[in-house]
Length: 307
Image 1 (cartoon, one colour):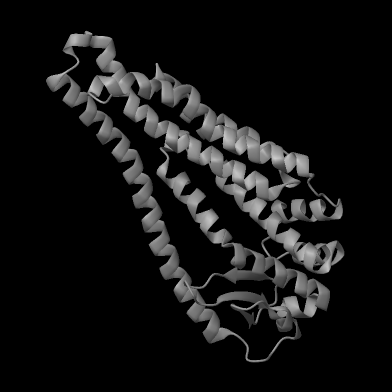
Image 2: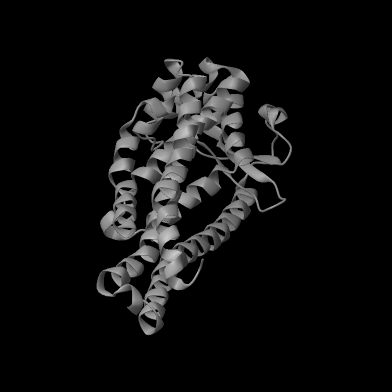
C-alpha cells in the first residue's frame, strides 16, 4: 500500500501541485519563501519516486507469497529489483545534473572570456557601487540590456551592461540594475536554476513540466529586484525595468511587465505569510515521511531480516 501512496504522491507533486503553485499570485509577496517551497516540492517528488521504487517489489512480495515463503530467492529478487529501480532514478538525476553542470561551466567560461575581450576599457561611475568579487563590463549595443555571468569558485563574477543601458538609465537606475545582478551573483541563483533545469530534464516526458522551472526563474528575478529596491528605492528599480521593457528589440517578455507591476504596486510579503510558506515547505517532506515511509519501514524491514 505504501508504494501506491508514494506513487500517487510523486505524480501529484510532479503535475497538479506545480500547475497550481505556478498560477498562485501570493508567491510574488514572498519570493524567497516561495522558492524554498518550490524546492521542497521538488525534493518531496524525488523522494516519493524513490520510495515508490523501493516499496513496490516488497508490496508484490507480500501480495503473492505467504509469510514463510518471503525468504531465499524471492526475497533476494525483491530486494535486488527495489535497489535497481531506486538506483536508476537517482543515477539518472545525478548524471543529468553532472552533465548540465559541466556543460554550463564550459559555456560560461567561454562567455566570460568573450566578455573580457569585447568589453570597453573606460570606467563607469556606477562601478563604485560594486561589491568585492564583482567586475563590471560594458559592451557596445543599441539595446538597453544587463545580465550577470557567475565566476568560477573563488573568482570574480561579471556584471554586464550595454552602452545603450548607460545612455538610457539615470545613475540611480543603473545602480539598481547593478544591485539586481549582484544579488544573483552573491546568492548563486544560477545554482538554483541548474537544479530545477536538471529535474526538468531528468523527469520522464509524460510527467515533465516547465512550470516549476519557469516559476522559480521569475521568483529569482523578483528576489533580485527586491535587492535593487532596498539599495536605491522602488522608483529607481521600476524606472530601470521600464526602460528595458520599453525597448522593442530587447526581447523582454511578460515576466518583466509582471515584475514592473509588482514593484509599482509596492508588493511586500508579511512575516506571517513567509513563516507559513516555510512551514508548508517543511511539512511537504516531513508529513509523508511520518505517515507513509516510517510505517512502511516498520513493517518491511523485518521481512528482510532487519529488526
